Image (cartoon, rainbow, N blue to C red):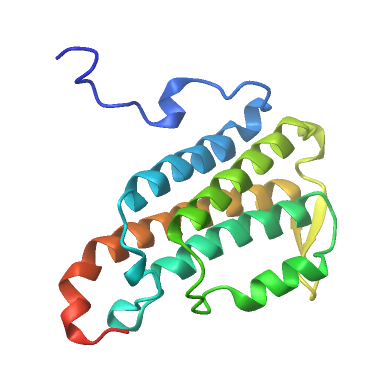
Length: 178
């Protein structure tokens, strides 16, 4: 196999992400991997199907909006800040069909959100990872590291769902799934 034929290594196999503390490398790796996979899965996607809900499940548009929103919200809580009105508005509209939105814009927005998150990880002091943080309006107690890791694993879960949705849409379009 030539170098050009070799499959690209997953992000975690490429080594440490520069500047990210060692204990937060898995978070950075998962988010960067998700960014790459989203770009790959969405390459050539037909925006006609962005809001299709196959078998009543979440649309591609929802998954793309949701992963950006989750990373933004959980990383906000991780630095012990409340959500802004803009973040609440974004949450309120996640998944609502919006014909003017293009999938490429959602993919780009997610990529930017990942970059913002990785920058935040670079500035995170590992000695604060077990510090108490609060989730949501109910102020559910958790830790900084809990929020960061949940952002990464929740994103990965939705990327998996996105892959399945993008894959099955062609087979269900004829089944009046909109």
